[in-house]
Structure formats: structure tokens, C-alpha cells
Length: 165
Image (spheres, rainbow, N blue to C red):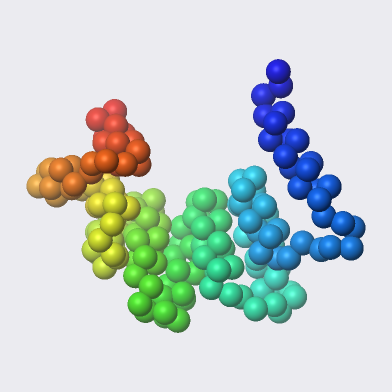
């Protein structure tokens, strides 16, 4: 059995289902790139669509752009994308958590904590604050968030990561 053979078949089926007259939309291309973990291709294509083709830079494209930049390790660029989105829609507080994640990977833990606290109360925020507390050796915050990490696989993986370190 060839590893990954089934996935290749499904990709071939998707290609065959489109007729030659149908073109892929920019959103479909971006999603396909991200699905195949081609973050560089997705980010470059979004910039091309925005800058060269002058197509609308929708909120959805901007979110995928920030996501791609984050996964490429271009955290400062991703922060800029998320901050622009935040200016357009200040009520979308999940963007604070995305910015905090970028700050965390930039090792700016105080800024990461500040932005994380502005985000909505959810498991993602709790995990983020948990990891920030671990990096800054804030034992009180670490124990407080540790008790909130229950139930989900992501929470269990965060706990396992800390115990491994």
C-alpha cells in the first residue's frame, strides 16, 4: 500500500469533476493551497489578487492571508493584516487572539498577554494565556488556567506540551 495514495485519488477526482470551461475562483484556489499546506502559494496569490488584479480584498481573503503569513513565520506581517481587520470591525474580538498568537511567537509575551485578555473568553484564549504564563514563569496564572483546561483534545495537548517541557 502506498502511503497517501487515497488522498491523491480524491484530488484527481476533484480535478476531473471540473469541466475545462470552469475556472477556479480565487477563494477556491486559496483554500486548495492552504489545504495542501502551501502557505507561501496562498499568501503570494492573495497579494497578487489584491495588488495586481485589483480584485476586492474581502475579509475572508484577509483572514486567510493572515493565517498564511502566520504559518510562514511572518508574524509581524500577519499582525498588520489582523490589525487592519480590527480597524474595519472592532467588534470582531477573536482577532485579538490571532494577534496575541503572533506576539507569542515573536516572543513578545507581555503584548501577547495584553491582546489575549482583550479576546473573547474561550478555550483558545485559555490555552494561549496558559502558554504565556509558562513562558513568563507566572505560576499563579499557570495554575489558574491549568484548572480551566478540561475536556477537549486541544486542551489535553496543551497540558501534555507543558508537562513535556
